[in-house]
Amino acid sequence: MRFAFMCRERPGASHHRVAVVGAGPAGLSATGYLVCRGFEVDVYEKLPIPGGMMTFAIPRHRIPLDSVMEGVEELRDKFGVKFFTSTKVVCGERRDEGDDLAASSADLLKLVEDYDAVLIATGTWRSRRLGIPGDDAKNVVSALEFLLDLHREELGLGSGHLRGFKRVVVIGGGLSAIDAAEESLLNGASEVHLVYRRTIREAPAGEYEVRRLIRLGVNWVELAAPQSIVVENGVARGAVFQRMKLGEPDETGRPRPIPIPGSEFEIEADLVVSAIGEIPTPPIASECGGLGKYVGRDGRILADRSLRVSGTNVFAAGDVVTGPSRIGQAVRQGLQAAREVDRALSLKVLVAR
Image (cartoon, rainbow, N blue to C red; front, side, top):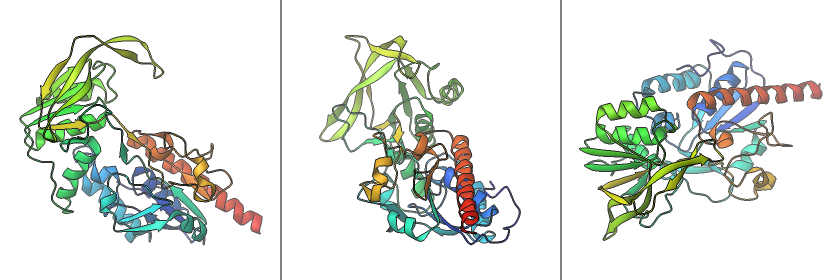
């Protein structure tokens, strides 16, 4: 996987320094573009190994780790990119999933001051909660927490604690739900239920992925929404669901799930995985020198059409701008943001001359 696919070697230096915050697909593709334009690029990543969710959440059959590492090593060894890993960039106080793997922190405002441009590509590292009784039981986890736990053990970053469960219930219909259900099977679960509140036709992951899991042995349960977690002594023993029917389209254009009274049922489980979505996690948790007003209520960075935070040298790309998306979309937007950084700094040189 080449991130610097626009060139074979670094051209002459431009004398501009850019900090990229986040080493996922958007950040790495932006880095590849910028080094091919001659920029000096430093990448800051809170996790110990670059790659973001490609390294720490997405199953290897989707994206092989060796492929990601080859691209990272090329950026480092051939193009002189410096990677500051295990370093969480933040302005203010905030905690997101995976933060325990960060050994140090860096001040975003200091980066803004020290670099000619800062490109934020920190993705979506906070999961939505179920918001139902019992969802705080110790064996109710997010899909991101579950997948991160499995991958950190594989990468030699500590022993995971979410293996060995035999009956797993995964709630959701997106790719995170698909991945959590499949990884549960691969790690020895004897019974895996994947429960979604609409039908297979509306599942965000796509009908093909759901049917693939059904062939692998996952029990697909559609038109059911979680109502509560059955908890005994702080431990989840199962989940209660209510049957749904589909009504008129909602704001997403998909048919709205409508509860059917008196249709509750329970699925027993020793692990419940919530995979109902993630939200953007910008490195901005306060007013932050005026940057705070450019963070929306949903956590997204409110960049302008050029993916720039208006009136600043800060740019943003990927899921921290769009919300959760496919890798291809994040890569495209990383390239777009890098082009805008290039254009802005080139114009700055022209003006200076």
